[in-house]
Length: 100
Image (cartoon, rainbow, N blue to C red; front, side):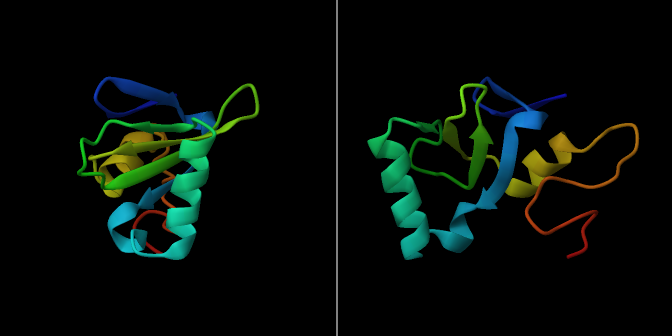
């Protein structure tokens, strides 16, 4: 299954490691280190034009970890990633069907 994350970017659901809310972690040192590392290795794709709301981490076929910043909310992306047939949860870290 494929997940549209905005700005004509579509990811395979099987490649998604996690979907994170940037607004809740923007000031943390861990987030800053992660973004710096992704930029340094040229593995950050940003389409948010300075208004990033979500960070989607993926593991590519070649083994690289790539981060995608988008201005689409984490809940919107998680809903897009739900299995339409079974509706058995989301990829949003720690939340399944709205419950922690």
